[in-house]
Image (cartoon, rainbow, N blue to C red; front, side, top):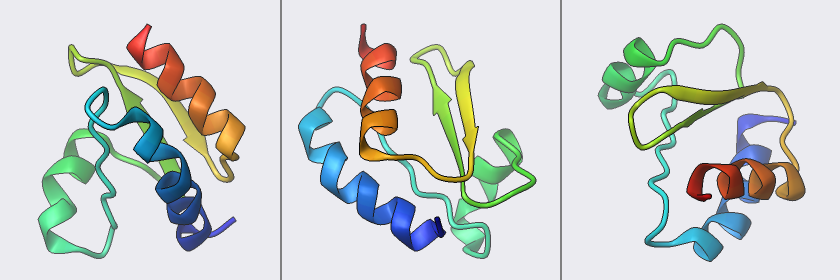
Length: 79
């Protein structure tokens, strides 16, 4: 799964969580994304980093993430 495919999964799932989570798509080649990448470094792309309200990393997924997998992780963040 490429970053583009992961973005398509996010675009389909994220509207269900509007107002309950913040989503940041930090593209590694995009200079404005540098602060996010510096704070939550990744080695492989795509990598999904799930951060709790306190700023602590709750989960990290390297590679593919299905709609179900994304929903499970987002649900865990808002419980």
